[in-house]
Image (tube, rainbow, N blue to C red; front, side, top):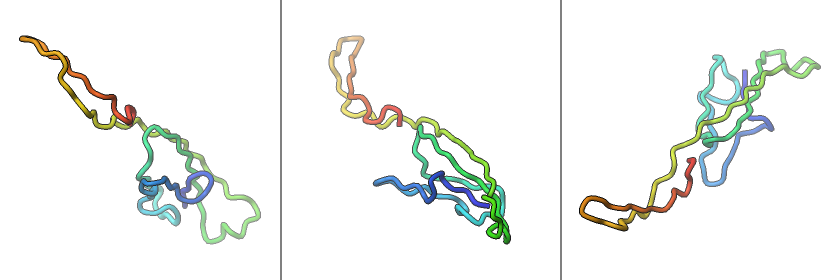
Length: 104
């Protein structure tokens, strides 16, 4: 069995780790794989197919199933530059810059 990202190959992102398949992307012996280093709030399509020692002899394309997955949003990035504005005897106003990545 094998699992691959539609379009073939391993997904790469500039400056970020490559998507990893545990235990591996192809040659699986158990019907399970863990995919790591996905981007938050992103759509992924995976093609899953089964093969054996004679699959390559067939003139027909190998049948496969598609799994379409959307990852959840990530936590926002850190809030920076918190400052105190107005302070009174019983209140305070705090202000800060919005996170660089409000949806992770």
